[in-house]
Amino acid sequence: MAKLLVLHLCFVLIASSSLFHVGTSITHKSQDGSEEWGYVQVRPKAHMFWWLYRSPSRVDVGSKPWPTILWLQGGPGGSGTGFGNFLEIGPLNSNLKPRNSTWLKKADLLFVDNPVGTGYSYVESGGEFAKGDVETAIDMTTLLVEVSNDTVGLRNAPLYIFAESYGGKFAVTLALSLLRAIQAGNLTLNLGGVALGNSWMSPEDYTSSWGPLLKDLSRIDDKTLQESNSLALKIKQQIKNTLYENATLSWNDLEGLIFSNSNHVDFYNFMLDFEMDSLAATTTKNSVESNRIDSLEVRKNSPYLSLNVYKPGATGDLEALMNGPIKQKLTIIPLNVTWGGQSDLVFQFFTGDFMKPRIKEVDELLAKGVNVTVYSGQVDLICSTKGTHAWINKLEWEGLKAFISKERTTLFCGNEKHTKGFTKSHKNLHFYWILGAGHFVPVDQPCVTLNMVDAITQSPTS
Image (cartoon, rainbow, N blue to C red; front, side, top):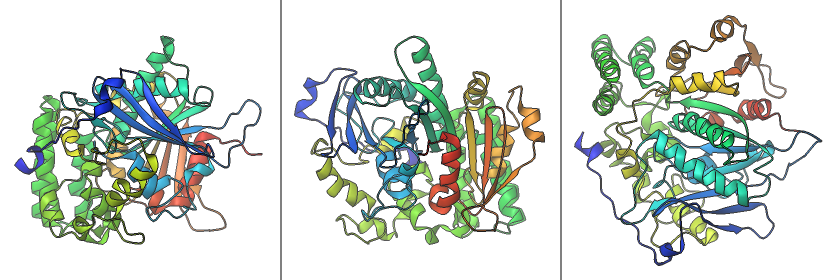
C-alpha cells in the first residue's frame, strides 16, 4: 500500500508566474479559429489548462444554438486534453489521424485538465492542489467564469457536462456549483444537462458488485468470492463510519485480491485479461482512472514504459505525443511543465474523497430539474452496470418509482439490425445500457454512443 501513497513531486517554477492573478487567463487561437486554448489561474500559483474545439458541423437554427460539451476525465488525475481528446472523442486519434466518430459532429468540445496538477495543469512551488471534489468544483467554476467571458459562444450555447469514471463525481459537484454561480449572477451560462458515463458515484455499490459478478462469469472461485465479499463489507462499514481514507486502502486491497486471483482480469472490460487491453494499459501507465491494482507490479513489464519519443503508429505513445508535438503546437505550455507530471500527487490529495458517494448530489440535480443521463458499458467491471443499478435505486428523487417501471427502448445503429443497447427515460432522468462496451464506451461502441450524444444535446440540423 505504501506504493499507492508514497508519491513524489517536483514542483514547477516558471519565470512568468508573477504576471498572473487569480481569475486571469492567457489564451491562444489557431489561425482558422477552429481551436482555442489557454490557462486560467484558478488560485494563487494554481494554473488550469483548457482546450476548445469548434465544430465544422456547426448549425444554428433559430432558438436552438449549437451546443458545447465539457468533457471531464476520471482518475482523479486523468487528462481530458490527452485521454478524452486523443483516445476517445476528439477530432484526431493518437496517430494524429481524423477520427470518424468524433463528437465534434454533434457539438463543440471543451477539454479541461482537471483538477489542477492533471495533464498540462500545474501547481507552482508553494501552491496548493485541490483537496477533494468540492474544491475542484470551485476551481472549475472559476475557470468557466473566465472562459465564458472571453470565449465567444460559451455564454449563449447550452453546456452539457459529460464525464467518465471519477469524472462523474466532478460533474455533479461542478453542476451544482455552476447553478449557484448562475443564481448569484456571477456566471452567464445555460446548463443543458449532465451525462455520467461509467461513473464512480457510489464506491460501496461498485466494490460490492465485483465478487458476485466475477463469480457468475467463472472468473473467480468460491474462496475468492468469500474473501472479496468480506473486504467489500469492510469497505461498506468504513464508508458508513466516514473512514474514507481507510476505505481507499481497503479498495486497493480488494482490487489486488481480485486481480491476483482472476489471472489479471481487466477492470475496464471483464471479458479481457489486463494484458489484452491496449487502452487500459496505456491509461494505467499514465495514472488515468486510477486502476492502481498493484500498479507498479503491473507496469514494470509493460512495453509502454520504454516509449519516450513520439512515433506515429506506435501503441501507447500518448505521453510522448503530449510532451512532444502537441506541446510544441500549443506554444504556451511552460518548458518545465511535463504533461501528467503531477498527476500522482493529485490522487494522493483525493484519498479522503475517493470513496465518498455522490448520490445526494444527483438527487439535488434531479430535484432542480437538471437533465441527468447515466450511461453504462455492459462489460465494465470497475463501474459495473450492476453497481450502477444499485446506486440509482438509492435515489430519493420523487420520479424514481415511475422511472423503474418504464419499459426500455431498443437501440440500433445505422442499417445494422442487431441490438446495440437499450434506453429509458422518465422526466429528467435518462439511462443508456450500451452493449459490448467496457469502461471506455465511446471507444468500444462509437456509433451508438454518437447517437446517444445527439439525443442528449439535441444538436440542430440544417
